[in-house]
Image 1 (tube, rainbow, N blue to C red):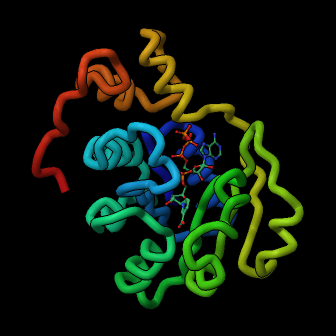
Image 2 (image 1 turned 90 degrees about the horizontal axis):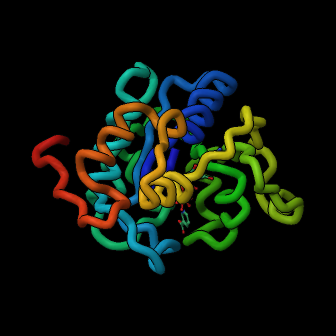
Image 3 (image 1 turned 180 degrees about the horizontal axis):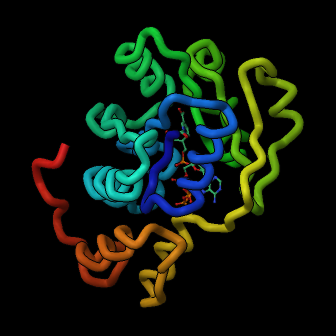
Length: 201
Ligand SMILES: Nc1ncnc2c1ncn2[C@@H]1O[C@H](COP(=O)(O)OP(=O)(O)OP(=O)(O)O)[C@@H](O)[C@H]1O
Ligand SMILES: O=C(O)c1ccc[n+]([C@@H]2O[C@H](COP(=O)([O-])O)[C@@H](O)[C@H]2O)c1
């Protein structure tokens, strides 16, 4: 599952868990973006903070892991590179790229879009407030795309950031460890964030 995860929230975790169960996947690899080019117009937290929060949020699930392929690759993050790197690491495995229908709706504008479907099957998770455009579905290879109905959780990282900045609580929208991590490192608050802990890879 690819995402900026700034921060990871329970909507991501439920979508990943449902996709794992419904598609009988061996493992869900969370891949935090390094430098998401489509979010260049806003401040994104450091890759290490986003990586560590994703590790904390997924640690209890034996089928969840986190990959550094995107945060360790210099330059803007493109899914074509993510899939090439994961394919090189896991040459015998079938890859499924899990994403929300909002992101899937933009896929034809992604770098090397026509090559993406050769490298992975794409899974679009339903998300409250977002509909997948029928036109997009008609233009992608049907046998390489699955739309999954996910229990609706109207949670977004944007809302968690806004709440935190406004001094409101985000309990139960994100795992407890993430609430504590945001407090500890002053993320999304008026005071600048502290540096992420070093040496955790
Ligand atoms: N509540 C949700 N239900 C289903 N899918 C989701 C949900 N939230 C995010 N996703 C999907 O997870 C992937 C990663 O999302 P991302 O890290 O950008 O979170 P976000 O909440 O959309 O962030 P932001 O509000 O900062 O744009 C995207 O493909 C997105 O569509
Ligand atoms: O490859 C691209 O051009 C591309 C453009 C936009 C988004 N993506 C990927 O889609 C995933 C979800 O992105 P986001 O912005 O919703 O967090 C994440 O893995 C991004 O790297 C990829």
